Image (cartoon, rainbow, N blue to C red; front, side):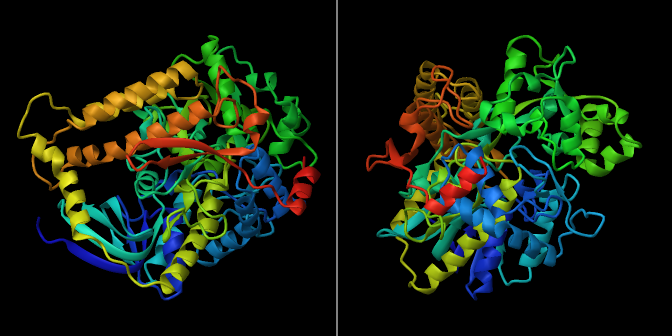
Length: 607
């Protein structure tokens, strides 16, 4: 094998979205030598797709809001599957992280008296989302990136990590390849932070971009770390459904937060039909009260369109299945109706939702100020991921940390809108801080040259197979078959027999993946890149399927048509996924630690 390009860091951060950037900034602030690896270009992170806002109990619009209410909302939204320590830290520290972001240059929308403006969002009792129109994630990435480049961080762009190395039980480094030239790089590190995002590309209809292939979860799993809550996949209720070229692209919840309503083909506002009992006291039962809530009336109840995402997604699917959907298999989201409520509605919509206005105008030739949008559920977010310690974000492997969507715990069975961006800030900081502290107390471990050669040879196998062209497979065809199968059999509504069928399908797809071949050479070869992503996609798809089979109840983002109710037998357990010594996957239940008495009281007070 050729010589490998080598890099040495105290802390290596894999992923340069909001969590990765915040982790790198924090680690660098301690004096640690920090490397930042990103699969794409710096600044092109999926965080920019988080448009609606960042959830933090600043209390700028409703002074009754505080961390206790935010904590209770997060726990209730997560169906009490959350790591309650993470939910506590998140609610307490989010306001400081938002103010810090502002100090670093983020420009938020303002109240008339100059405070950061906050908007309503699903599952939140109060207007809590600090925002920049509907481009909040973009502003966050811009701010973090501008701050990070002055911290002495080594940035490795268009570079993909394909394996992690250990010395005994401790992480020591990683193998990656340069996507432009195809050359391998060895990263030696005392601590590694995984912040690679979610798994959306395991499904056919998704708001996620091409990078979201479950890299961090699979890397951690192969290194011996446990995964948790992988059955809890969030299907965002509103993605574009027409034209086909834009199917799945996100339509921010901010549209509903600004007064958008969901109607079926009969023009009926169907969300009033099905309000869960535990949300009934908080949810408006008529159009007028819902509108008053949107306009900032503290005493009004929120409209049903702002119920939790899992519930709204299932209501939309019910309308479609029962024949009341839109012409292209969705429903209608209408913000134009507010023209009867306010003066200058066109300018109001363009100001509050500029990205949505341009997105629909350019991609679907629809003017959202005068026409309704066609929307339907799209695979959006993974609540599960790498099991981490609530305080330090360390995984079950020493020296391996995770933050953001790669990590499990904070969101439980269902994430509230806006909590993802504050999650990135709060736990990105904590991961970077504790990774640097770990690195400062340990010496560099060794990386076996034999292990590096084995990983590199495996990565090059698709080229070798092309020399014996019999019964070969194309990487895109295998990826497409996986996405179609997961969407159909392990999607929004799940059944035991269909998921067992998916397990058989995954086994067949693994066999096909072993026969994948690519032509050409290692430079600028997207077919090779797709072939290398397949193992990660198959790993997370199996983890989701096995976990969903194990949880025989419906809770949050996990809905079983054969077990449609919650079950007390599963209420106090997380589902863990681990790798056996023979490479097979095992699933087990782990009891959720009992919540502290003071936090229990907060939950009771805010029911």
